[in-house]
Length: 448
Image 1 (cartoon, rainbow, N blue to C red):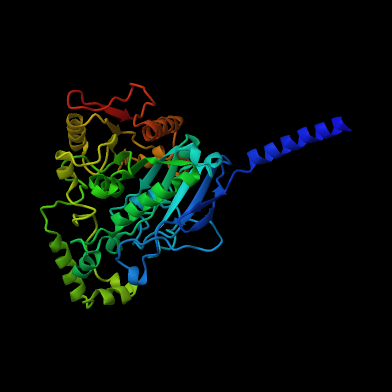
Image 2: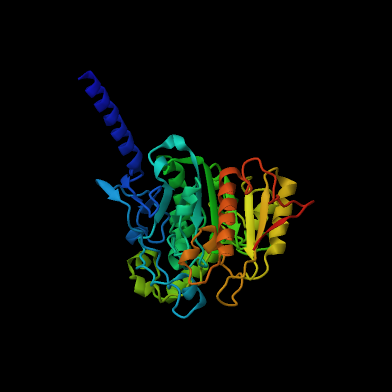
């Protein structure tokens, strides 16, 4: 009988151990309440979709700075991506529609302040795991895109031990409209950077909550491409991001020289407000109350042309070039690069940025040049082409990708995740082959 009980106990322990290993924690507590994730097609990776990181910016909060997330009751099942910000979207027949929009854009909404988290299933609910984290800011000229675009996915990142977070933020007029009444409401001398404040709110949410997913709040890399890269350049100049960011990746956003530089302090902040007021007054919306009461259809008829960040005296106090040259950007490792057939040749400005950093800081700056001319047509290494590779989503592209493309993607995935982990794309303590670029020894890693 004793032997039977011993055998039964051993079997019971084995069964319980197996159950604990096969059923990971899927529910975590975050700002707002309890949140339940779902496993991806890879059972080793869990995703939390459509997580609110701020209150819906609707009604009286239209054009306002992001406010704390509203609590929910019970357990929120995070199995659906949140709505993208209001936008025109890619148009059928256009190059980027064919390239990145195989299906119609999901319904857009003013209620768009959501993020998505991919994490190793085994680290969810284990703060002691302390994995590095990457926050991805999408591009789209500050007027389009979303955090769950077809090229974006965090599964390959999570399998390499990095938690990936993608975000939505307000775009176009809703994200970058300036007005004297908004400036007065803000109380710090400027307005019009709502979309960048959204990004800052998402960054703070990550800092405060990522431990619940197994992430390390002291190891957050911000990264973005095109307008997302411009957003990164804006955030690393800001006094409000100190202590929140450990590294930065700037893709096709230029370096020094004014390309996507976050505006210049030489332009008076009041000029942005005056322009916004005139446009709205001419359209019959002569007060902030009327602008907030108007329907989106009515507001969409007003073409503000305000589509990017600019100094506001608080979040953005100077342009990127000014901040970099005066040594006032975040003193962290940088990875920066562009593509062979990008929106202009950015290499001179990128090289200048890396050279400048080497004279100011002991933190490295790594420069790349993606020049793989994608198969399928003669578009080449076009603006955004590298996204398929650095998210390892080649299988979602219509292009006839080769074994060489998948090998390049694996190489880039290692580079990007190593940088997020160690501030070195080669890996911890490794010297090559990708060398930091300095004034004395410029170096560009060719990705082809």
